[in-house]
Length: 167
Ligand SMILES: [Zn+2]
Ligand SMILES: [Zn+2]
Image (cartoon, rainbow, N blue to C red; front, side, top):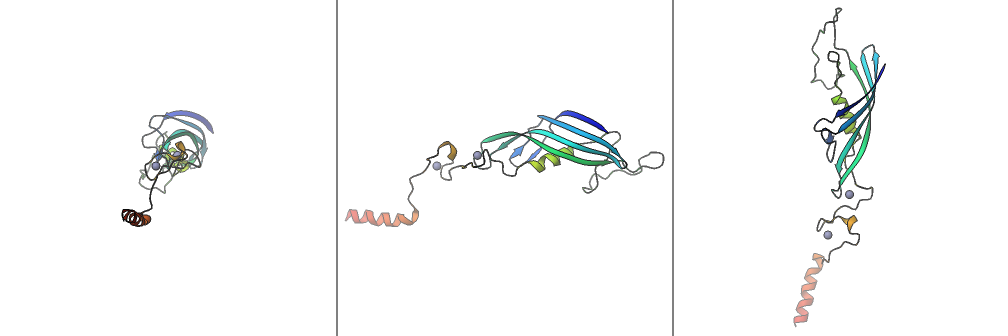
């Protein structure tokens, strides 16, 4: 068993929807690598900086996100002499990831773990009021915000009153 910590730059396109991990920002990995019969079992945590937009008012929101990692990386099939006997099929999503030579590629594992923890609709605060549907103003910045409007159903009545006045 080995414990490792690593700081690596975030890969491009990490995140989902309105919440993203900016490319090249620091990703902290705090991992345990355990040798098991089938390969190496990797567990631990990943920490990233998330930059998002509030789904209601579009204000930028940023926070630190941690996600748990648990993944078994298997040895590729080998013959009795230790020669790899079959190419690993990367297209098969159900197959466990494999160890390539002496390397474990954590990118897909980190990506999956981080994306799973990100909110689909991040908000700047729990009770964000969002934007005015009339003018797009941010309602939390202007609590008394309203517009003088006439309900279209009353418009005809208003016209009648105007006619009466003219008479
Ligand atoms: Zn908001
Ligand atoms: Zn408005």
